[in-house]
Length: 319
Image 1 (tube, rainbow, N blue to C red):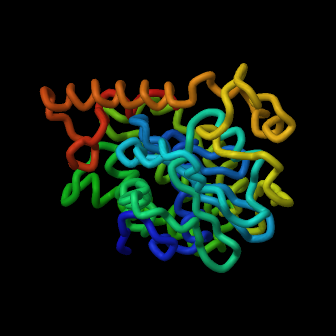
Image 2 (image 1 turned 180 degrees about the horizontal axis):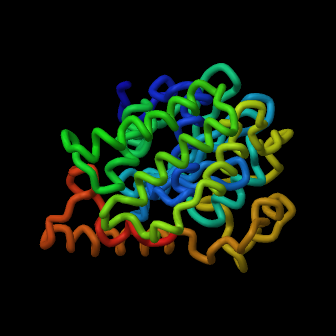
C-alpha cells in the first residue's frame, strides 16, 4: 500500500482492517510483548516515545476517527485558523477537547462507515505525517514485523522463523473475526511465551510477568473475540459553539478568553496551557537534543532503520 505526502484518505485501509491490526498489537502489548500500542476506552494509541503518535477511535454506528501528529511535520500547525476537525457533526468533540488540551493534533481522518475523509489541505501542507506513522499497520505482514522487531529479532534467523507464525496466528484471528475465546487464549499464550524467552533489550518484563489475561481482556474489549462487542465512543450531535483547536483558543486572562463562545472549548481534563506554543517548542528542543545525540552514537531502531528521534533514549519510556 502506497502512502502519499501529504496523506490521502485512500492511503488508509478500511477502518475495520486498521482497527483489528492495531487492536491485536495492543493485546500483545497488554500481555507483555511491547510494541508501542496501548488500548483504553475504545481507542488504540500508538506512541513511539519521540514526539510521534496516533490514536484510532471506534465511534458508534460503524464509524471511526484517526488523529495524530508527527514532530517532523508540524510546522503548518502554527498557521492561524488551521483546523483539521472541520468534518461531520458526529465527530467526538468531547474527546477532541481532551486531546487538544494535551497536544495539538496534526491531522484528523474520519470513517463514515464506508470511506475515509479529511479536510482539504492548503497548499502549504506538504506532509501531514501519515506516511511516517501508519505504514506498520497497513498490512498484517508489517504488523507482525513490528512485533518481532521489538523482540530484537532479525530476518532469516531461527528465532524469526519460529516467532513469525505465532504472531501471524494472532493477526489472522484478528482479521478473520471468528476466533473463539479458547482459540484466542491458545494463540496469545503461544505468542507471549515465545516473546518472554527472547533476550532483547526491549523486553522490560520478567518471564513470569507475561500474562495472557490482560491480553485476552483487550481482545474482548476491541471486539476481536467471537461474539464479543467492541467498545465504542458515542457519536455527538454537532460541533459545540465556539469550539476551536487549542492553538486558536484565547489564552486565559486575555480579552474574550472566558466568553460564552469559548467556555465549552476550555473544558477538559486539564487547563489549556497559558502559552499553546510553548509545549511544542519544548518538544522540538528535546527532539533536537536527541537528534544531536544520534549523530554521535549512530543508534538504530529495532527494525534496523536509521533512528529519527533518539529511539534508543525514548522507546523504553513509559507512555
